[in-house]
Image 1 (tube, rainbow over the protein chains, first blue to last red):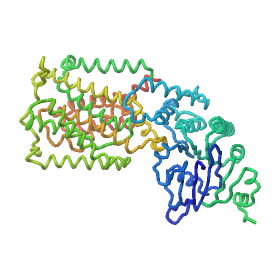
Image 2 (tube, chains in turn blue, red; image 1 turned 90 degrees about the vertical axis):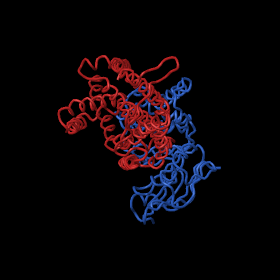
Image 3 (tube, each protein chain N blue to C red; image 1 turned 30 degrees about the horizontal axis):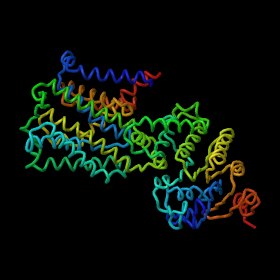
Image 4 (tube, each protein chain N blue to C red; image 1 turned 180 degrees about the horizontal axis):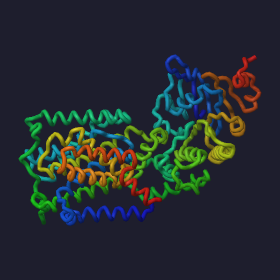
Length: 250
Length: 316
């Protein structure tokens, strides 16, 4: 059974059809990229999977369970974590505190109204692990709001990872970054995918990143499914080239 | 801020609070003012649990403050002349009302939340104002007084000895403040910080945000109703002004004035507010315009409040 099955989902905003009858199947351990020109509906499609929006029609199954209309927090509990196109972190707390909150919530301590020494030790150790994995250890006690964009993004990805997700959704992880930062984040994602055997779906504009990382690529255009295949298939696909270069498909 | 400074700050606060009955008369003030500052500080700190640590602005906390006060006054007057029983009744009344109203407003954000809290607050104000047979309407609940505390082995005469009453207030304040500090340092407390910092991120960490805001609201109202019971005991009287919207505004002003990102900020705000009120109101009826001016200056130039300035100086 596939980990994630999206069946013919659509999302209407009034008369606008942002996502039109799109299906996607993601296998365990896969790294899938979703690409498409601006306005293709990639982020809306992501929002449907993560529960930020609910589909107008269609069905989403995660690990055999129907999650189409579940609230975001409940999807997180089932193992779907995400990051956002515009980084969403806790700016006035340090990286350590950011990660700590994520780890505590993931450990089921969110309603615990006291501080337990045992639990705290275990949480702190996990935070240290996450810091080391991301290379943020030296900046751990700085406020997130004061850090460079790339570090904030790495922090956001690690917060999502702290949830021990079974599916990680990354919405344009390298958006607005310079070459070095893009490279660092790409390496981080690759490492998580390889070492943690994490299933990842990402939206990305930077084709170097996409072709470097993805096992399979799905292309959306104007809310519709356009193509799907390996990076080689997609690079050779005429319809995709047409969509990107604005030509009429032959 | 280094840890040492925090500890030194705590020691300073408690030293000043515990010695207040001795130095207040020396600077030409009086012990009752100390009691009032501590009671309002508890109310403002309770509000700040929601405002400063959850990021949700309530403009209706006076309602639960007032329910605490009315619960205490009516219980002592009509049911049981006992201070602890009266307090318990007031706290239960205020907290249960908050818990029931909570689900109706916990989904709202920003100005919508603030407006609905005012609206519900005014409902209680008008009930207290109109239900003459029970509450005495505009005249308030009078002809009762707090009762000395009997511990079995000893009696604390909080009725006639105003120093004893002050220390009773400080003891209740200490327990409440310690409980709030304890909660804020727990994993649950950190989920509230998460909501304040970034609600969207909090939601996508798997925190059911509305539910946690409801809990923070109930906890905050629980502590504000305790302040309300003390307020009734201090005055041996309560009238509808205790739960009117301008009282809610006072709590917000105190919290913002002192610094809503600082734990002790609302205490400082309460002290500044009430001392200014005490001194200026003996000179002019328009004392509120002076406090208003001071408030505007602080908000414009020191958005982190008075304690925020001190902390920044200490950090630089």
